Every structure is written in C-alpha cells, then in structure tokens.
Amino acid sequence: MLNAELHASPQLLGARRRWSLEGLQAKSVPNLQFSSSWVLPVCSWLCWSRAEESQRQKGRRRWICGAVSNDEVKIFRALILGELERGQSQFQALCFVTRLHRNEIIPSESMAKLRQKNPRTVRQAEEVRGLEHLSMDVAVNFSKGAQLSSHIHNVCAEAKEAIYTREDDVKFWLEKGVDGSMFEVLPQTSDLPDLQRCRLCADRWKPCICSYSLSIEWYPCMLKYCRSRDAAGKVSSYKCGIRSCQKGYTFDYYVPQKQLCLWDEET
Image 1: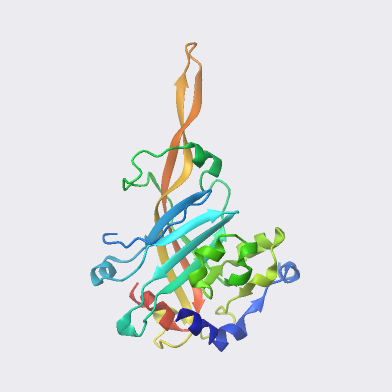
Image 2: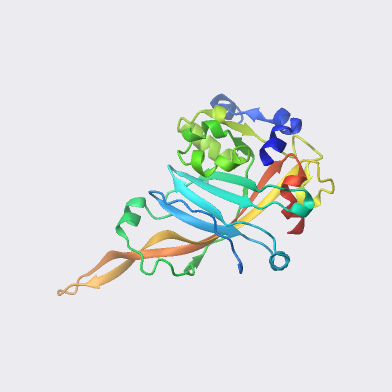
C-alpha cells in the first residue's frame, strides 16, 4: 500500500522539517476511465493524465483525476492503478494542493446564475493556456488539512500520506493565519546530494523526485460579455455565457522509493 510505504521510510521522516511563521520570516485521450467528480459551490473540473502516444498504445492504466476549488485553494486528486506485473497490487492516490488566484476561474455567484445547454456534450476548450510546472516541495498533514480547505478531508481521503503543496503557497497561507504545524518540508537535492529524478534512477527502491503530468481539458475560466444597442444607439455590455479554457500541469515531488513513480521512467 502507498500509505505503508510512506510510513516506513526513515529517509522521508528524518529529513522533513516543520514549518513555522518564525522560520519563514527568518529565511525570507482516446480511451478514458472516469472517476467521480465533486459538485461544489465554485465548480468541478475533470482532468486526465497527459501521456505520450506510445504510453496510450501500451494501455497505461491511468484514472481520470478530479480538481476542485474553494476557499482560495485548488485540489487536484489523481488515482493511478497499480501495475500488477511490477509488484503493485493497489492503486496510488495523489493530492496536489495549490493556491487559487483571483480571476483564475469565474466567481461562484456567476456560475449559479448560468445554465448550460446540452450538459452531456463533450466540449472543446476555446482557449489553451500554457503548461504550468510546479515543484511540490511541502507535505500536508491530512488530519489538519481542514484548516486549509474543508474539502481535503473528502477529496484526499485515499491520499492521506501523499498530499503535496508548494513553499510559496505555504508562505501565503501562513500569513493568512493557517497553522504551520500541518506543513512539512520534503527532502530536496540540496538536502540529499544523491537525490535524482525518478526517470534517471536505476534502483527501484531508492528515493527520487517524481514527475506527474495532467491536463484539465475544459473548465470555466472567465465570463463572456455580449454587446447590445438600445433605441438611442447607446451600446452596453451584458454577461452572456462563459469562456472555457484548457490547461496542463506538471508536478514534481519527492517519493521515498522509485516504486511509487514507475510511470516516470516511460515519459
């Protein structure tokens, strides 16, 4: 199990450092399987792993992931089926938590007023946004995660020991009054000089830096405005729908064993 392997890693537990506010101030797809999505006040997103065409032809067993946003927090959850022929009898669950920036998606009150026509239609995004590469160098304590977002308890229940975030986002949340004891810094190459990227690591049981990529194929990123002209010829604008976007993410994070990141050797 993923949980047991993480608990058993002395390298991970020994190298983690607890966060404190004082410390911060001091160191200034063709075939897809859908999993459940979450209907939340803001929105629900569906996304899937980005894989090379050769991987799709090999039948890589990757699940759809869900992404939710609320409380100025984005949560990406990925479920990855185990490779039985490689000693993985269970699935792995990952959660990536990042800050939700203003205007990144449309406001929840605007969503509530809009009605979607033909909701079962598979839609194409109108705008493709650039790939975002994130270094997830901090672990989040699941039992304390509710202070950050009330949705972590449900969304990340299967990834209790694999919830990751970024140092920059942690600094922002600490300034907002979030308890720093829920965050632990993960080992980096500066801590462990021999730490490699998993795709370069030959030993399946050594720690390494794993990469996981996914793409949100469609999500409501902004409102659309239409123009009208009254009898006097005066032009005014009004909300008339949403603009949809597509965006890709790559997450880099520490794993205590390459066995937890076998897909990275094939990308």
